[in-house]
Length: 183
Image (tube, rainbow, N blue to C red):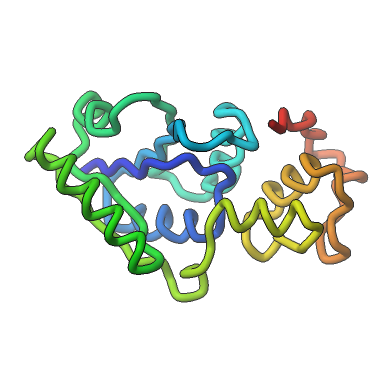
């Protein structure tokens, strides 16, 4: 069974990774679908977000990352997915997600929406919160994968907190990443 986990993932957080990892144990394949949110200006380009996600899920063998700008339900049909996977943090998420699930059901009654509540330690976490903390110089390496934290610090042209490993001296086996195209 194929599940689609859609979102803007700008940036991917440990909460997103929690849902992806748990979804990977429930489904044969999980497609992480990077999509645009017309109400948001992204920090990272779609390609950069895909690269960040690929690095974050490299240890999971049944995850695919793709991008699509359109109705998620149409993409799900194209990929023969049976489930839309959604994470829930707080009650306000449920209201919005339930409305979307009901709407999607009117568009494709053969595709189910499955809600996974985030693990308690990530119930407060959002991409917007991560960006706000970083913008004001706060540490974010406990909220996102380390490579994503480096990208965010680079966007805000800030020195990572002392707890972050310095990207200035890469190991010989690791290529030096190109600068992010921050917006």
